[in-house]
Image 1 (cartoon, rainbow, N blue to C red):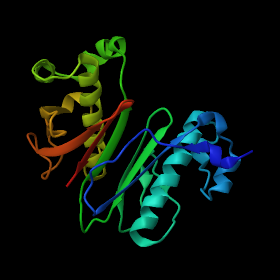
Image 2: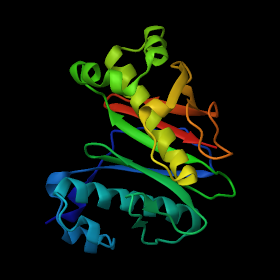
Image 3: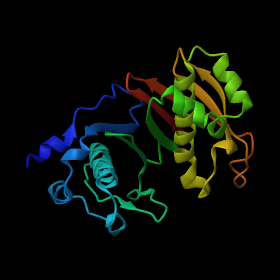
Image 4: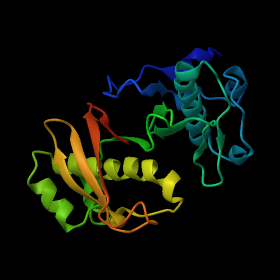
Length: 233
C-alpha cells in the first residue's frame, strides 16, 4: 500500500494568520486509511479509538499529523498529542492549539501562550439549502437571522458561516471556562463579508473573566468547498 495516498492536496487556500500562529492543513482519503498508518506516521493509537469507525480514526490521525507539523515549525519538536476525556487535544506545555476536520479536510493551528491566550479554528463544508433550513432554528436566534437577511450571503451559506463562527468561538474559549456551552449561549453580533471579519459575544457568564456581553472579533475565509473561521487573541 502506498501510504502517501492517505494524505492528499487540501482544498483550503491561504489563511491570513499572524506570524505568531502556525497553521497547517491537508486533505486526506478515508478510503486509504489503515490502522498501520499510525505506526507509519509515528502517532500513538489511543485506546479511545479501539472501537471507532475508520472515518473517526482517519480524522484523528490526520489531525495529529498536521498539528505535530505545526509544532515542529514552532520549536523543532515532534511530540505526541494526547486526548483529554472530553476529546480535546492535550497540547504540550508551552503551547496552545486547535484542530478542525470536515469530510476529508483537516486544519491545525498552534501558538505559544506568550503571544496568544485564545485560539480556535473551524472548517465546515457548505450546507445544502435543505439542511440549513432544518438546522436554522437550532443554530441562530432572531437577531442572527436578521443579520443574515441584511447581508449579501445566500441563506445556506449564512447558516453554515454562523454555525462555524460559533464552533471556532467555542474551541477558543472552552480551555478557559472548562464548560460545555450551546449555540444559544453565544451570539454573532456582526459579519463583514468584505473583510472576512465578525464579532461574537457571550450571552452567559463563565466566571469573573468571561461575563455575559464579553465579545471578541474573529476572521473567516471563504472557499469553493466551504468556510474556515478562526478566533485568536
